[in-house]
Length: 325
View (spheres, rainbow, N blue to C red):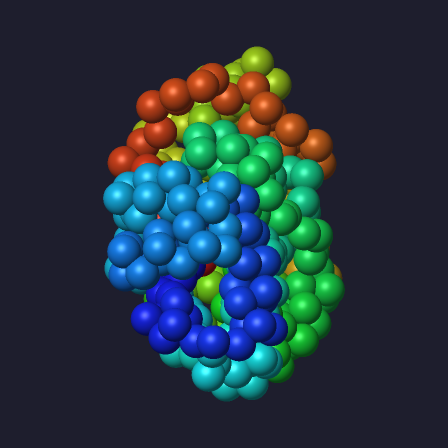
């Protein structure tokens, strides 16, 4: 966030305000992820009188401040609100600002273990953000995430201090088109999450472009797990449909092969792509890599050369997280 401390803050003669401003500035010194805007001479002069131990610190911090244009700005002043009850921009007291900057960004994941491995592998700075306490990953899989989104959307502070990341759960690239909805007889969890997120700021959620996190696992990591399956998936005949393959359960998991009378609608969502492959390939693709394949993100080498589409998506996600922090 960007913390804009208004000029009146330094001249307002009120003992309670001064105490709350001291507390706020001390906390701000411990949370360096937030950029600070203030009139330098006024802030430093005030600190010399009421917070002398922090004069040099704020002199350096003001000089080195870097502002992200899409970050949320909070304006701090003696006349600011003590509670947040409306949408930004926020004009708040030091007491209310204290609560905001003391609150890490809550990152809600479908699985806080496997999804965390995925982000650590694709966004190198993520681990540091978590260790510094800037981001707090939380579990929100299944219907729990949909309920969580609804609760967050009802609170003005939470909707800006929470970020949701979830799989697309799409089975074909055509399903990423605007206005798509799952056919009768089947459902799409990622689509449900998107629908719920309409009540959140668009800057506070990201739906993956591929079916699931497992669809981002690179070939060289998958080959030691199942060489034959990996070679087939990354052959020229599969192409970008590898991004929509059921990595855990294979074609059987989607009722494609062997055909399942209970999953006819789901099997049809791949538009006949998989069943048009040679029979040898279909047999190879039947079972998938198993339910624990996401653990292989722990084997992705540092500085792995991700393909351009993954880099573009992860840069976008990293920017959104930094803006939200």
